[in-house]
Amino acid sequence: MIRIRARLQREDGVAAVEFAIVAMVFLLFLYGIITYGFIFGLDQSMNHAAEEGARAAISKTTEADAITHAEATALDRLSWLGSRIQASDIDATVADCALDAGVRCITVTITYPWETRPIVPRLATLPQPSELIAKAVVGLT
Image (cartoon, rainbow, N blue to C red; front, side):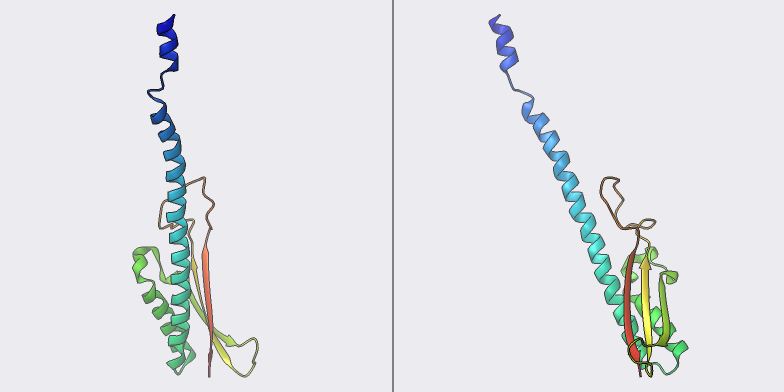
């Protein structure tokens, strides 16, 4: 009888079980931090690329040259993505500015489809955006 009680009171494997439970939660939390870090980093990089593309278009004389140069500059700034970024993800347009009808503005829009081309593998339990969008507008005088 004493041997049975002694066996029931032993806690030899409890630490391993507790570690397994805590480790799963910790790794999920760590993966979330890494994933959202990549999402926010990509969003910041896209905003910077859109701004640089719009600024680069200021020096061009024709609207067609401005559009081409803006798209090429934005694509170059996102070259660290390699094959994940495509030229079709970047769109530049020239139109009248919303606030001043006498001024033409170039708008550079970058749309990255995170759902189909994530940088880190998706995990079903973490909510993630389907796409990231960056936009920059600069007046062409």
